Length: 126
Length: 113
Image 1 (tube, one colour):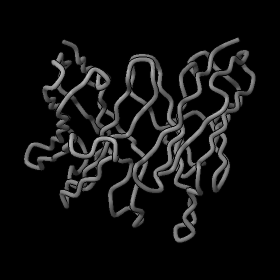
Image 2: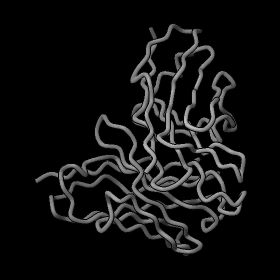
Image 3: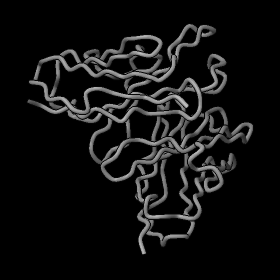
């Protein structure tokens, strides 16, 4: 079965950078797009960006342009989320998520996220 | 960017009664080429990641109880829980995946009355 296991909780200083990993097992890694979604304390879900491992193509929400980098390593079936210039407002739980369907399912550009990691709590505080 | 809204923000329903959540997108999420609405519903319980319940606006994910149903097209959608159970207490989010940035609604909290 599909499983996404994320790296552990982090405490960061303002201005520093963050890397969160997400190791996928089950299914063919390169056949599915991966998204990163965050959730600030007591708030809703915010889509940050996504990567298509087979092509390396990334798409980022405008809000995170210039600060966010998402990568994927097919050899280790791991996707990474790198966020720089951290501020207190970046305090949140960060989730990785895999698409429900493979990219070739029906030629749609995008799909819902059917599998989620457990979440990584990131606290940004001086 | 497509903006998603939901109503109500929260609702309290008696056990066994119907719960209805509405979701609206700022532009149509229907694809005529695929004849599908690019709209999903998720359930999130405290301390857990979201769980996909429904996609293509009305297709129930495998293993999801049939008391959950989705309907609507274009810009207006509804999630219905036909007979609320205690384990359905959660926050429910709609999401459009018609284009990027993918976007979630603000969520609707469902509680027991």
